[in-house]
Image (cartoon, rainbow, N blue to C red; front, side, top):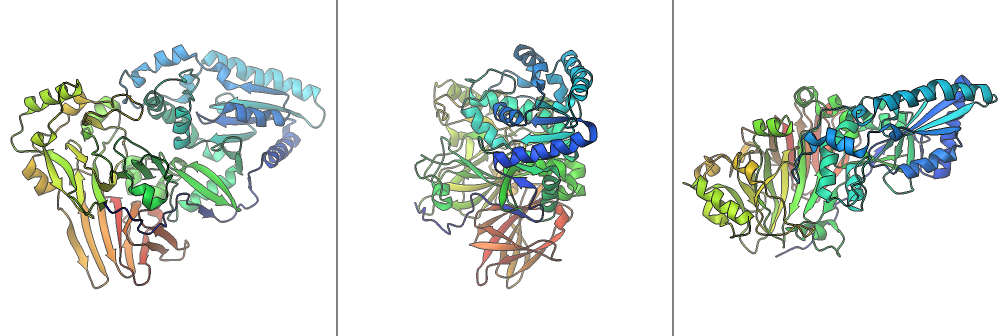
Amino acid sequence: MNLKRKYGNYELHPKMKITGYENEIWDEKKEIIEELKRAVQEKQKEKKTCILSFDLYPGVRKEEMMELANALQPDRIFDIEDCAKDEETLLREFNDYITDDRVFGIMCHKTIDTWFESEKLKTMKKTIETEYVSECVEEKDTNGGLIVIIGTATELLTEADVLVYCDLTRWEIQLRYRSGMPNWHSTNYNDPILTKYKRGFFIEWRLADRYKKERYEKFTYLLDTETENAPVLTTGNAFRGALQQLAGQPFRMEPYFDPGVWGGQWMKENFGLDASKENFAWSFDGVPEENSLNLEIGGKTLKVPAQDLVLYAPHELLGERVHGRFGAEFPIRFDLLDTMGGQNLSLQVHPLTEYIYEKFGMPYTQDESYYLLDADEDEETYVYLGLKEGVDKKEMERELRAAEKGEERFPVEKYVNKIPVKKHDHVLIPAGTVHCSGKNTMVLEISATPYIFTFKLWDWGRLGMDGLPRPIHLDHGMKNIQWNRDTKWVYDNIVGQTRTMEKTENCEVERTGLHSREFIDTIRYTLSGPHTVSMDDTVHVMNLVEGRSARIESMDGSFAAFTVHYAETAIVPAAVGTYRIVPEEGEMIRMLVASVR
């Protein structure tokens, strides 16, 4: 197996330079405290008593925010979470969304006020607005008083004069779960990671995002709480301005990497990852709900969830056509699956649209595809895809259930096609198709974004990274397998579907997918010279699948040329409209671009 590094220019921590706002960001605690004191004093000139809120996204370390609050020397601090329902009540009231399943819950439609006791909120609100504010006004001199409110959803109590929204990325939340952090207002420190993540994904992040997106314009400040005891503060004005800038230019998010039982060595070698790790299986480098943005403002870096951009500027980012269909939700996902020197992925199937909606409350499903970014050239590489001709459904189910119990190994090749693949092949996988990638491949997975809904059918008898059997979901899986997707259907519909649309001396444009059941379209540009791309009112997600680097250039000078390196994923907002892909001089490149058709 050849794992020699190809280019070695993949950026692990890309920063998006924001122009302006150079004096509206602070990354030293002393400076942050001084700036907040200044803002409080300005408000006190107007109304004597100032209310400042530290509004926390679930997962922010409250003790750190409490240190900042105390440093402001307030007259009193109110913790809104004193009004929260107790843990037992929360578990009972949200049980239908949590479910008994190890992996899957149901998307919660509630709002964040349902976490709190309404009477306790009323009592605390009365104390703040009548009793204590009056006391401060009467007792304080001309300098006025200061009340601080801290916790999640502080605006449920009162509208703050100075609102400091304390943000946190999803990946950091997951790392904190692994380090023992419980879910919001809970004591489940030792629960399995899957349990904590499920509550975050299906409940906490849904409620918190609904609350947050209604208040972006109210933020006086945005506080990045990603790094322990190293907060970064920026003005709400700078935060919103930065998001508006990104909504009109190409950008990258910060990728993250994770090991897995089937993980390989390709990313470790090509991206310069930690060589001491056993493997890396996953890379999310194109998932705004998971990834973060590094905003470089005035030479300082502010890290925020990329989801903030989706929620704040969905029209500019997605385009009117896509926003009209999906709302403020980013519908395309790029990630990397590394089995080079590793093992096969689990045999799996994704739910049909009606099933995922009826069972889990999701409006669309995880249609996907595998683009072979690389593959071992020294031995046969393959994907498992679709069923063989004449499969006996009952017999296959019997053998799957016996394998789940550990009674026998499931004979995959008796039932599932083993399709040879090579570098730059693109295999399409509409929901309902049995599939998995084989060992010694490097897959760019292009899919719709409900990525948690994978029904594992067989996992080759392996244990997970936690030493426990990995979850198998045969009951769900058997209800979604499309039994007519046999060998002939696979070759007629989802293998070898690439079609040339345009070809010149310096350019070949090919449509590589996806299947007619899937809403994502993918175009591959093979270029040795500049090529202009029109976006048709949809966001573009791209990956440089061949070549050292390429530039994305503006047609009207509205943004600076943006460089994409080999295997990097970048996003071009719909607001750009038209752009130019420019290879390095004398080089041939391949750029794969996904959009919503």
